[in-house]
Length: 467
Ligand code: ADP
Image: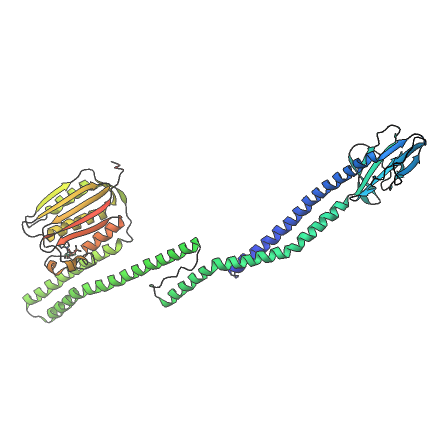
């Protein structure tokens, strides 16, 4: 069964199921139809006997005897004069009705002998005569002078069974037709529902062999499940494409950024190896050391950045108000440009965050503000709960950012020309953007070149204070 296609399996299952259901239905038909026909037979038997009971008249002497018409039947038995009306029906609906006097048949057939199977007025009885089963219903004629006169109705029990069998036969004739319809239905249904899956797997194979992650699978099915499957598949491809693209860009950016210090190191090393003058040699060595340190810092930052995706995060309710004011004060201590720091921090603003990452986001923004603000400039850090959204603003009156740079500052390794004098690798804001995304927050910037910049971070407030 393993190697068969899903379509074949579904068709086989449906066929087997329909055959089993048909077989069980046939058994039910047999059972219920037999019960019903047996009931009908018994009712016919009783009504045939009951309707004939008034068709018998008894006379005790010949003088009083009169026949209503020429078709009435006259019988003499044991000094009784019996007139059987012409409405008396001897056989109706396979029921035989006979008139007995004592044990002798006076009129009708003696199918179930009264001698062997005596009368009783106790409903329907079952007797076997010559290997045939009969239902028998007896009724005494309760008129004066009719003592020992009985009507006996008899019907063969298996008459009903043969009717049941013929009903079953007509049912069985339809079974192949039912199975055929079911199998065709199963083939149609399985094809309709599995064709889109086949298309999806064909597209997946194409993408796999062609290595083209920009391809997408067309929506081909009209069922909800197939639409969801296609959407999920395309979503997965989208993520893969973005992550491959990010990796490709990261690799090229990294090699590009490392190339400059590396070539400086190589040149300085080459010079040092040919240098006899100790002073010159020392200078080359210092250059190598400086560039080496720069490379090491850059590599560490890159490693930290790439670890953000895989790092184990520990989210908790954090008192963002205390965290922001503590970080602002700490960074202010490193200030060498007499910058004025103004803090307007609302108390009890809580966020749900990873403490280490959210601290990094805040300190990157404040450090940049100090870095890109001129001597005697001013910075304002404000935090407030704005209708359930925490808003952190870091505003400076520093060098500002030009329109052409503003879209790129969150890209890795991007640094504007005006900021080249300050230390840095152009990774800080990439961290900020990624950390914001990890926390479901947003970061935006408003800046005018030469006037200053404002960075605004927004995240949902954490309602349960926990503390
Ligand atoms: P880095 O500061 O190490 O260069 P960032 O990623 O933190 O890297 O910043 C990227 C660039 O964005 C900076 O080089 C600078 O040009 C610009 N920038 C960031 N913050 C500010 C700011 N407060 N004022 C002016 N320019 C800024």
